[in-house]
Amino acid sequence: EAGVTQFPSHSVIEKGQTVTLRCDPISGHDNLYWYRRVMGKEIKFLLHFVKESKQDESGMPNNRFLAERTGGTYSTLKVQPAELEDSGVYFCASSPNFRGGASGANVLTFGAGSRLTVL
Amino acid sequence: QKEVEQNSGPLSVPEGAIASLNCTYSDRVSQSFFWYRQYSGKSPELIMSIYSNGDKEDGRFTAQLNKASQYVSLLIRDSQPSDSATYLCAVGFTGGGNKLTFGTGTQLKVEL
Image (cartoon, rainbow over the protein chains, first blue to last red):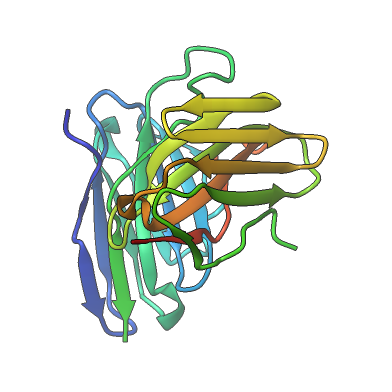
């Protein structure tokens, strides 16, 4: 089974430019999450899709970030315009549907991340 | 105040010893607890999940949860050089939807 795939692995852009990160979740996983790790800090939640719907976007920093998941398959995260503080590693994760109860809930499989460097 | 706290390390242990990694979390009703292992430049990999008080063992790994004291720990027995990585503690809080709150991670070094 293929894991969670993210592209690009590393992107270097200048302040003010636009970058689009892509995530392909594990096939059949309805839940897709974006997280971000800024250097020296913990991994932080950005948002959660269930199929194509945004379930929780409480972690999105501001309106320069736009996430989409058309058709409920892959997802993109666009940063426009990028700022210096957007630099970090953006992780995507996916999980299957909950089957009830705590067991199995929130068991996320992560991708390797997309490292974004804004100069 | 951070919601999930870990000592950043590095924690150095000799090969064959027991490595003990600790994590404390804030005073909120918590539901699920996870330990992820991350090698440099790689994806976080789930190694243990625990949902109720007590110990849970899986091979060389044992997770321990104490909700009254608000801590969760990970023991690695017979540590190997291949266990050298960053270990991330993650907590799912009740009312937090489906998102996880992570600690900053503890770097473990197993020395020959």
